[in-house]
Length: 106
Image (cartoon, rainbow, N blue to C red; front, side, top):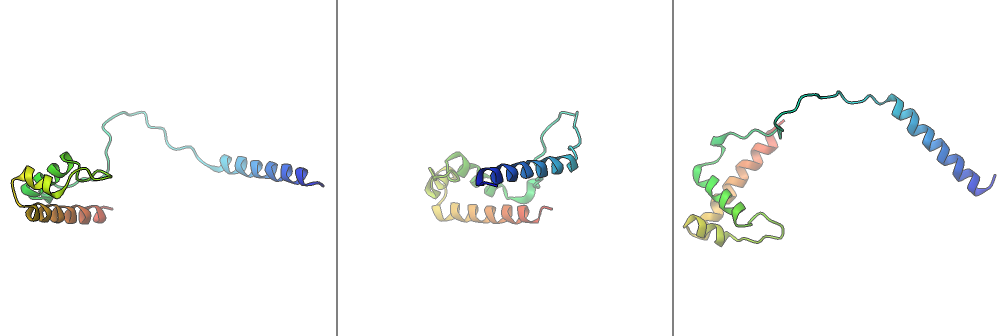
């Protein structure tokens, strides 16, 4: 048996294995309902303080979370009318609370 024939027979065996596996796989249940998409993550409105929510919104609006980052903490601080260190603290605390909430979702 030459190399090409062995490769052909190997490919045929692989195809047969895929076909057999396919026959054992059940199709997912069909969903006929259409509705709102639920992302699965429900965060409480009280998770962040009002000021933390403002900071996160300002950060998003100013490109702070874009890659590459187009906004800075200084931009967020200007939007919040506070010092950059204060804006940074608001963002860090908000991010920590959000990360903890996401990590604890089951």
